[in-house]
Image (tube, rainbow, N blue to C red; front, top):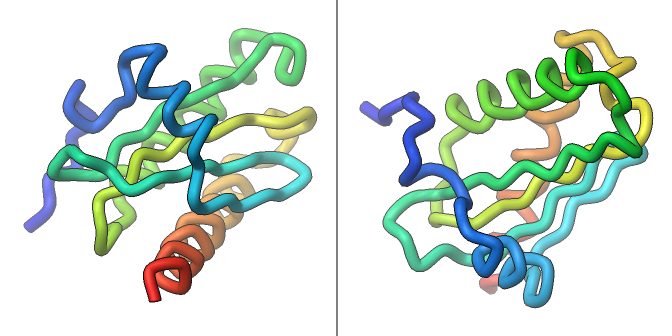
Length: 121
């Protein structure tokens, strides 16, 4: 049974890890409210990094609610191959209801997994 904890081993922590994903992303999923970039991970499990700027989501409450939903959906989703993923929030992401954001993220995680599988073959 997979662990649903979001420990440090499940996060991108260093600037160099983020830079690697930005510079050499293999898979990209874009939407007007979000952008996902990913590369295959050297770690044993998928890791997530969040980029949620004040310019796009001005209030702390909005940024925190987006982070909460992203982390929750990431914890529950099963990736077949470990990936390092960077989530970038775009303008208006905080205006979505948590249910809509949850649905959008589930679809985006699926699309990311499918595109990575296509890339490998």
